[in-house]
Length: 468
Image (cartoon, rainbow, N blue to C red; front, side):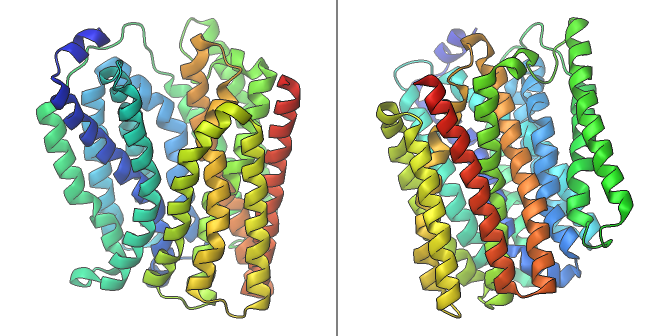
């Protein structure tokens, strides 16, 4: 079937399809970072609490991570084109809702819906690439995909600062969401015209109950971390978290029941007994735990403590993002020769970058935007060395028949870790800033970032010794 679809597309035609789906992926990638730059302004204008600030980022990730596997299966059932169009249209409309939100809770609800629609859109991108590029052009197509994915971070940081500063038509921070609307409409129109239709894949079934239970479990685990400070860590919060643990345990039992009845559980249960894979998955969790939370903390520190304007704060991250892209491009080749050692080296460079950042903040008070931009490049280079080959290292022990399920678990774990990091480290940062000072809060957050990366490196080292 795949060969038939590929054969029906002219070579030039499929490159236009590539441009369309990669543009959607770029829009999604930009959105992940553009919001970070606007967060302090959003907090001020909507009078949002610290919990609401964190939730704007975290709830999006929770919705996306719990539904991404379901989004992929919907593509198999109804065809990648139909689900892609629905996802892009939904992402466009929910972006509009985000921009029109009048309160913190409304923006959180809109971001929840935006994350859910992203989970429909994103899985179809790779599915389309796999479908259309099964020949010699495959490496080139995926190379373009990787470059665009890397540049999305730099574009998001820069564009976020520009839009907030320009205050186009007086809409202020709302422009960071409105910008998705015209691009989303163009992508929908182009995809509807030239994207190929693919017949459904027979035998694919949804696990709606599994996705719902996992979402509720994560919400009970992460929600108290987000709102703990606002309610002074009331005792009932710990009961909610305990309920979250119980729900996650029930989720695993539910998945076993679904499999026993001949259904298609959300996760491949056989992978839970694959020790090397689970070890790698845990390493990935701790790596991503210190990922988006780092950018949230740095954004808040620069704009609120150092009073760096949004545009300059956004531009501070651009050299980091470009360095990340460079490191990502070279790490894959290095990993072929040095294996997991490259990832451990990347973790070490990240920790060195955090140490230099702490020293800079301690002895250059206050550090300039240019100084911070140069210092953060160290962290970005280390992060790029790890992120590109990490998925391959984690999935190396997975049997080919379970590669798709393993990739789904990896992607879900990465986004859950991002959300958990934003909630946990963000909560510690805001609590320390309130009790002590912004500088002390940053030092505390840096220590937590370093600890998380050290744990990830230790697990990667364990994997390396086990496979040596």
